[in-house]
Length: 301
Ligand code: BEZ
Ligand code: FE
Image (cartoon, rainbow, N blue to C red; front, side):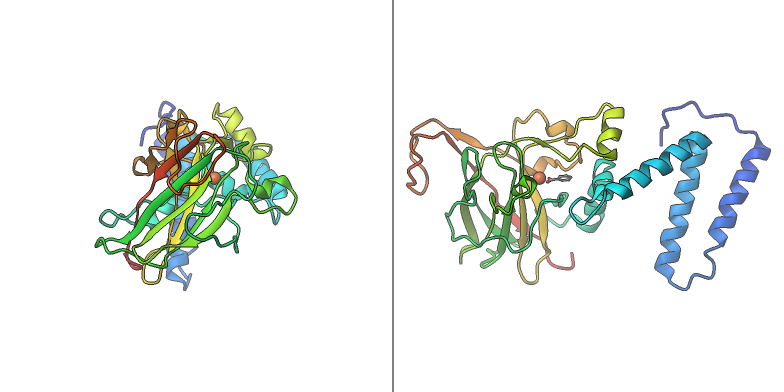
């Protein structure tokens, strides 16, 4: 690994003292009867001590770190999870997604779940609109779900959710509206289609300690425009992912590192008055369309 600082010249005697502390803590897990807990804790201690020694952490910095974590805890409640947000902006969420969704043939890549999924979304029939009054430009979304042998997956559950044209999820309005989210099932040919909204960029919650950290680091809280999917079917690995908009300037600096090249899609904007795929009359509104074919890995891949 390359560090940002010049390697500090630490005298051998000092290095030995520091290594002795690490060894003592690692040894303290010797009687742990849960082998997985022992492995995780020993590795955590190993890397944590290496980090402290690598940056030559000052006592003042240690205090600031504790204070930051304390603020992160205080702002967390049933509706706001600042620790997950911290994991997201450190790329720890995406790294965990990667480790747990091993590449399998051409199976669609997974990405971060995010805090805006809601259980029990309304069910829609194929071709219906998920907007439920949410503002935004209509977007026709279609595709097919197959397994990794190319076989169509009928009756797969496709959950979709997204921010509206103003960059807010329904849950952020503080009333009990349900909008821009729904689920539907694939047909006998594995196909699905619905009207959604053209995705817009929006910031992750940034009025707390994680926002302070982003600001101090010169990082933006914005996420690249996207549309969330969760696709599940018996015997196949549940896929949590999004699709992103080709050409979006935020693609290379998504605040939570969720963008994967394979998930960037062409959203084709249609000129005003272009007939819609299902004959829907949009009253002269501009609309767009995108195709997203989804490949599910086997359950135990
Ligand atoms: C989201 O896409 O909705 C999201 C993901 C991670 C953190 C915040 C928001
Ligand atoms: Fe999102």
